[in-house]
Amino acid sequence: MQEVAVGHKSLADYTHLAGRGRIEEIRELAAELQGKRVLHLSATAFGGGVSEILFTLIPLMNDVGLDTHWRVIMGKEEFFNATKLLHNSLQGDPNSLSAEQWELFDEYQRLNGEALEDDWDVIIVHDPQPVGIRRIAAEHSGKWIWRCHIDLSTPNPEPIERLEPLIAEYDASVWHMEKYVPTHLKDLDGIRIVPPAIDPLSPKNMALSPEDASFVCDQFGIDVERPLICQVSRFDPWKDPIGVIDAYRQVREQIPEAQLALVGSMASDDPEGWEFFQSTYEHADSDPDIKILNNLNNVGAIEVNAFQSQADLILQKSIREGFGLTVSEGLWKSRPVIAGNVGGIPLQIVDGESGFLVDSPEQCAERSVEILKDPELGKRLGKAGKERTRERFLTPRLLADWLRIFHDLDV
Image (tube, rainbow, N blue to C red; front, side, top):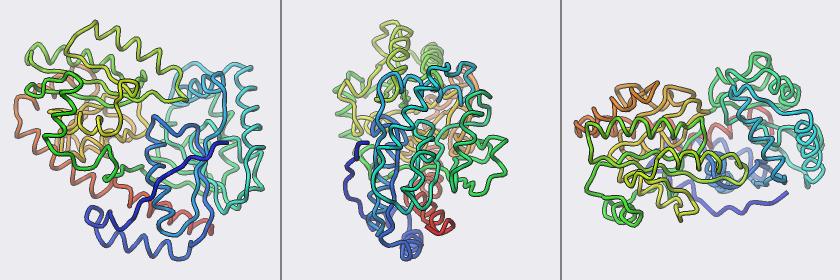
């Protein structure tokens, strides 16, 4: 397993954003957990919401007195091909793993479990890729928690039946929403409902001046004098970039000067992403006003911040979505957001108050035109969205939730 190096963060720096009451609550919760050894296990340190959360959560856990580490499991391409298929099937894709792929999955659970070192007070295992490690390495930790970041409300039956016995062995399982808990697991002890959160001080979300945002966008060929629509997400069929392009083309019929930026990060555990990136590129049909960008174009956190901050409108037109932190990212920047009415997105957006929820490219296009033609509407939605995000979806709230779970489990 590979140790992931994380930087230092100070909880005190969040006081002006999260409020003094929240910070004091966290200090009180952490007082009895000083020195507890916590390990997070995940499939990758790059390219997704899980890694973004951990790069903030772990330093803050350390700052309040826990001894917290992060390790990434090992696996070859064929393993991650299988786990990507598993990820999709758990979100409803009718395809499932072959017998050979299940054997490969089990083999890497064994290899990673045997590679686990040291003893811990609690180990938090993120998502399906390493879910079987507890069975192999149970003696290495006093408590084990499985953290699910995806929507399991309507899974393909075969893979969830394979995973349910593994999940049931954990001392607790943590889910974004109650409806994501599979029926056969709802009676388990230790189920916790905890939405994720964004780091308002990270390079992706920190305050960026309009001049700096404009400068960055200009470097990528975006005309800062024209309306910009932006979606930031993995190139994944569930994020529906094809549908975004279709909606954009309908918007152009009424607002021909509009531009579209599709911005994503290619993750090391997502080989399918490259294939879908290519199909998205082909669907754009060389339209010079559709910018399709990723981390290989030198797009990092600051660039994403600039695109979102500069955008007149942010989309997250997901078909399925575990939560969709890019929604909170857009709302935090006071931008109007239109998003799919799926998964955890309705927790973040009150339709018509802090953004719009849509079910089709046609609805997306209609709402987009409405906002682009009425800037005051966009400002009103953006302001309400930022305040909702401040109250519910910033990292200090997530840290407090984890500390409460540790208390409940007597870590």
